[in-house]
Image (cartoon, rainbow, N blue to C red; front, side, top):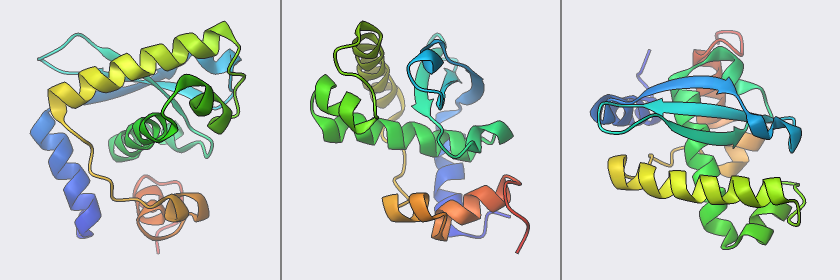
Length: 150
């Protein structure tokens, strides 16, 4: 079921990195109800905890491809924001909240560690496709069992 080139690209990246992903509750859910942690396990590093905002409930499936896309999207938000306050506002968080500042620091550190260890995650899902549940986003969700088979 990996005939879509984007699915193949994500699956190949996951196989090459040999990471294992585990979805876990987040201590930061108090800041944002959609906060979920993804623990990245590998032989190379101790587990790396990455908080993502799963507004569509995709991680309820524990699907590795959806998890890696959410990590990549979260890392992109951090890079695009440029600073903690801009990131917080973009995520709907209070930039003056100490917990929010702590989360931003942890995510920046996790992003650096992740990128150094495994490189960038293939960016195969456009923002529009993700938000509209179209294209590859829909294919990923269907593959994970969130949508009926076509």
